[in-house]
Length: 284
Length: 237
Image (cartoon, rainbow over all chains, first blue to last red; front, side, top):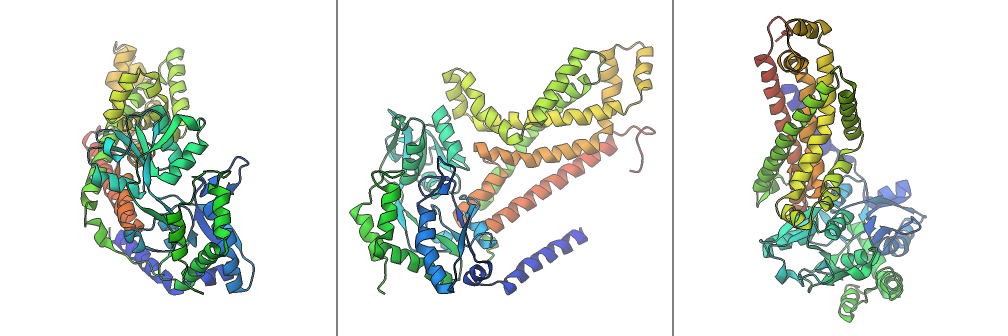
């Protein structure tokens, strides 16, 4: 027991000692020539594997086309972007363990999360809704008491439902495909997630017409890119990258590519959200 | 960039009650699965040694089929694959009454039963053949020889590897979170969701698993001492 204790102490000391040698994220990128991002493999169109087996998406494009050039300018040398898979359960540990430098997927910016990581400015706004089989009696959060509702574990939605509709039977799945499978087979009556995620899932389903996205937004989900806390130089280049993209029309171009009428998941940008994005851009 | 530890998240809010619920679910699913695994393991382990080929073949099939497919696949099999075979009203009733728990329990129990079977078989085969012959000479039938002599000795021999299997079973119960069983690992993730403090939550989960496993190992060590047959396998102790 004594030996076990001393071992635990040694591990704890080691963990405490590491940050002494830590470098800033920009120093790390300069040293390795690589920006490592955490992103999703199954959340179209933010990060997903497409039909030709390429790992692509809106969040990935923002990093590669808006943020990467700004980092390259800042460091004065070309860098490459390396992608690793992150999920709601792993994204914060991936950051704090230095496995990735930036989480660019579908992370909702929240106050508790800001105590562990820093967020970029908001690059997308959505809210939670429900995906149901066509003709389902569920039309929104008002109908879900007593129903079996699938949620994605680690998302903000389950938390809100648990507080607002304690009568709903929540079934939490680690990833979207399992939750959708449960919905398709009737294990659950509805699947709830951010509206845009459901739109992506529906678009990818074998028969999109069999599914309906219902209900008003019952939550506010501003997506931001997450990074390690207290590294304001890195956060600055990420934000400048996003601001320049919004200002120059690059953001609009990428939005059109993924969410436009011919995009992966048609989801028009509302004038309200467009204005909100522009207001985040501070003057040059 | 220093990670700010906030151990307070483990006892503030609902964290404590979540962890407790998680522990209870983990223990519940593991205990039921263990009973199933032990029953299947003893049965098929014994069948693999009987002097009648069709029974041996059936036991071999069970063992090889279930232990050579990943547990995760069995979880999906019992949760997504089995219910559609039932009539719709039965399915609905099950889904409203904790189908995921029972699917997870069967997946764990049947999978570990196959592994337990090999442990039991090695126990039985380590018993000298003369024991079996002596039982026959006493006028016991094959079934009686197994029930009264072979299996009781084998069960005592296999306590250490069976402890190993039991601990594996307990820890493998965490795979059930993929079919939304709210066990211990699930609850540590839940705490992470609410507080964004992953390392604290995982540490709490790790320590709880450690305590559970050490306790089970202690109970099994007691069982080993309590049921030993003096003069036969009572070495050390």
